[in-house]
Image (cartoon, rainbow, N blue to C red):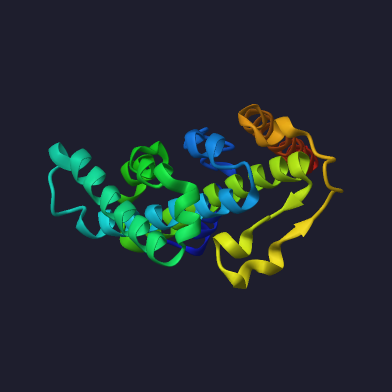
Length: 226
């Protein structure tokens, strides 16, 4: 039985410490290609989060029912099954978003992040810790894609969550806003080079925050050690 501290560690690692994009640099294909807007980044991130959560749960449930020799094809089959479910559901209920994401939904199958977490966690731990790890790693991935998309969208077109009501449904219309005047953005930021610039900027910001936190923690423990 996992303790509260272990679950806190899972949450912290999934959202920040071991963030799939900003720490482990995994899943960069959708991070580069589908983050020209915050809405697209959110949609791709949520699809991946659903796949990671469901796959982690299924692998943890059946982890004692297959041998180590065949675990890799079993993992791929389970991930592919969850991707198929996401693909069909999105096509049925979020068709506009489905048309935007297109080929990148099936490509979740070959995303290294779901497979890595299944191999490292879900195949070795009970269902609740595995489910929590898959969920918060997926949420951390979705947050990273959304932030990258927001940076690119604001600097490139001056909007935030543009067309959210069209792609995600009328309930998300409240997210749509204009941050900068029209035609004041930097076109390059919504083109492929902008993905590298925005991701690099966020990597620098995260590194600075981590270093400052480490120095603060070291300074706080120094007097007590003395």
